[in-house]
Length: 211
Image (cartoon, rainbow, N blue to C red):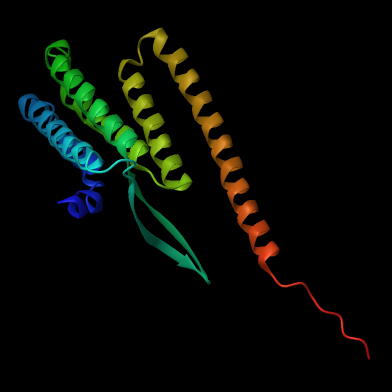
């Protein structure tokens, strides 16, 4: 069960993401179906998060990860994956649980909105992006998921674009995304520099021969 949980942690953000795509394909008139799919997806994410959290309690200092090669270029390989430890598992449970409460509350709060279906697609997408941030095991995947959080925030803020407050909120979100992109770039460059430095340190010193 432990190995299955670690190997399939990716399902936690994948289920709400799949739900968001399915909801986007629905007509605006299918409001009940949209809400049901969103809630079911979030319940599934919460259930899987609880299983993951219980798994991390089996041993002190539990930490597991699963990496795979995304693509290779030359002799180098770009690897991404996910990580599971008590902190990540606790955050998964918290995000999934709070998200589920928001989903249920939104059913009544958005009941009269004409774009009810689209709103729940955006909510599921936002939840998936947040869950992806938690389990990311590389700077690249962390950056991608964080930018997806920014995109989901933009979509949710733009949902009420006719309100003046939405414009200022979007400006703040855009500034935060720019700052996150710059920070991630510096971190990736720093990691690459450290790897290059370690490689140079491990290389044998050149020997000069005298004729």
